[in-house]
Length: 117
Length: 113
Image (cartoon, rainbow over all chains, first blue to last red; front, side):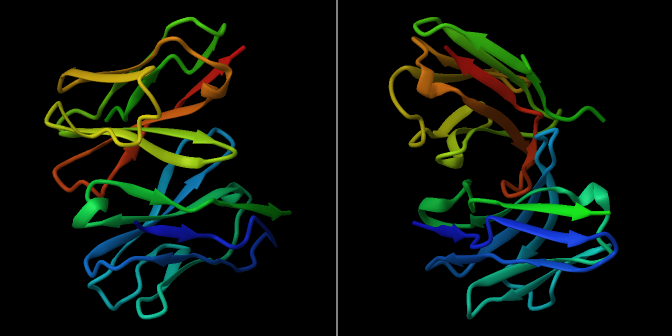
């Protein structure tokens, strides 16, 4: 079974600064996808960024980028120029393209990020 | 475009009562997922459907839980009888052919007293 671990229960950052959220995962699969979801106080789950395991290039979406280290099974999220609206719970998630995990998103425990003015 | 629609947004019920949560997926999506979020267990997949057929219900906690998808635009998650430990936020998500691209609804916060 796949596991996703977020070792930082809470993080804080000053507005306009950069913050990195950590995520590690464990899998025996070779073809999979990794995601970061944002859950603001409204509790809506919002997809922030996606990384395909077969791609070596790190995904980037505006101020959000990832550092994907496949061999180390690490998938961190960097938020640049943090904004107050980035305050939320962030979840790392794994989706396997085969085996018992096919069709399932496995989530980490989440990291609460607070952006201070 | 309308996203995934869930109703009700909040539900408060007494132990032993039947609870029905509803979901309308995004039009054209052929996969639908039900998740539960609690402080203790985080986000966990309960069941998912592909083309209205249940594919994996291994996450359904027990026989008190049942889910149906009678057509491509509607699904229900029913709990009968409900218990206080069922209190959680229940999310519905849908996806197009590529199962990994899941779009979540706003969730239903269920409180069982």
